[in-house]
Length: 372
Ligand SMILES: NC(=O)C1=CN([C@@H]2O[C@H](COP(=O)(O)OP(=O)(O)OC[C@H]3O[C@@H](n4cnc5c(N)ncnc54)[C@H](O)[C@@H]3O)[C@@H](O)[C@H]2O)C=CC1
Image (spheres, rainbow, N blue to C red):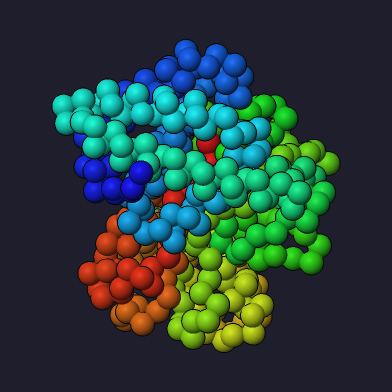
């Protein structure tokens, strides 16, 4: 069986516009054929559906970049240990996936495409299974973590500090899935907002969103002393250790979290690059971390924090939308750039930076489905 990324991508492009129906069909088929698997998933499947499709999209479009694909699949395999996933479940998922792609790409389907999907899925599943097996005995499937601080910084935004009961190794810029006792099997993603600390504590920046089970629980119903579950750290937006370049960070709202961890780690490394942090919020009241950032700025003179507010006419600092504000400065073409925040803001910022001559290889971002 040989990999044929072109055939997989072509057939996936036919399925992509029908994503919603295809994922509903996939889960319907998976649970009809394997009713015992239903109990492993949360009662409401909407977020799970989005996650499946975005993971699949990422895998399909990275088939030509074996290194980044391998890194992603290894993290995904480790992270799936927290669901209790074992090797045989991959067969069930593979069968349902193949049936789904076959059905939604029926117009172009043939034996060659089927073989390409079987080869790609087998390779991906094997990579996930192997990394999960390697991780057993080294790390727990998930970590228990005690809430040791809970600061409500705005009506809807809290900064929460956790102390995992076992060491949680991670890279600055990575994110974790979090589960609360109130919503079993419902995991939501948050970036770790600090560089690794000796005391093993981690901070999360959480905004509650309407209908967001986990985020609302974390903001309104979580107290110091509560215990949360935390999954294996994931993500590839980590600082370039060898880089001597200056740094631009563009943070939208709580998308600040991983960028703050990256900035802390650069400062801790002893390097002295100039760092510009454009920190955007809709209103000045939502610049929830500004006092901490100003304190960081005063202890590290190479850091410049530039708050930007988009939706408050009377704000007397810098106003505007981050993608456009990013272009108001001199060129960033020689910088390492990190961008995080609402997906539309990230996409538009990256687009404009590229137009202004920043090569894509120096723009770092991660797709995090945070805060629901
Ligand atoms: N909490 C966390 O750990 C992490 C959160 N995120 C993501 O960051 C985002 C943060 O959301 P909020 O705090 O609610 O941000 P928000 O909606 O309040 O916006 C924050 C900033 O982004 C700008 N912005 C928003 N939409 C834009 C658009 N379409 N075009 C241009 N600029 C735009 C706003 O003007 C503002 O400056 C969420 O999408 C979340 O998933 C990402 C990584 C980690």
